[in-house]
Length: 277
Image 1 (cartoon, helix red, strand yellow):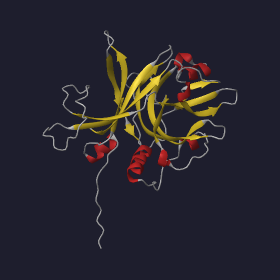
Image 2 (tube, helix red, strand yellow):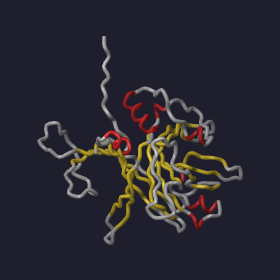
Image 3 (tube, rainbow, N blue to C red):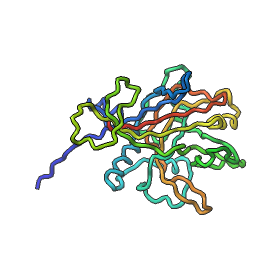
Image 4 (cartoon, rainbow, N blue to C red):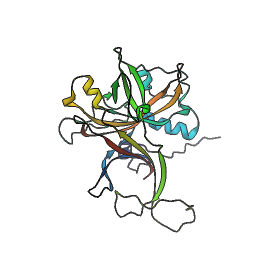
């Protein structure tokens, strides 16, 4: 019997879209949340992300229920952060975020071109550097590395809230405003607007995040980050009863203009991954 090849493109990256001349079915958008003069939430679009090859492979593994024949190395291997009970990537989810300093030059708007082959954000740096974590969100830090001097680097952080997934009609007159959320069956609907489905992640940066690293290296006047990434992994229990993440891989990232944290700054970002756009 002759075997025929059927192709259905699941395009995960803007550069792939350009090469194939078709619309991508998955992308990400980052918004910074702030307040207006009346205390209302306002969202400023920071940029759009690139889903890297590791993220694309994980998405297909989840859909197909099988392991890929090849995957990029994990960050555990790259940064020598071993974990017990690592297992396979079957239990991995988008669970963490981290930042880097290689996403932009010194001039405003001088963003570095994104690369789908990346295994981590450009020049990954720790979010926290300390001997003991303190604060209301002290239990959110992972990917811990011993500095050998009584202090530790914590490179990645969990989300402050459980991610949400929702679907909306594309009936908004403003591109920056969500359309009507869908809560009932629509198979027999006569509406003709398009649909938009997205997962939403909340990324909270407190006044110690990133800044603490620059204090530790004596370069507080240069304290900044300009790349943000989402990471997949599986939380596993260690021999001492603590938890760490295994099979950590970069899912997606985007480069932004330099965000200074020379002064104590708390920020909140809304990171959306859209599967219907």
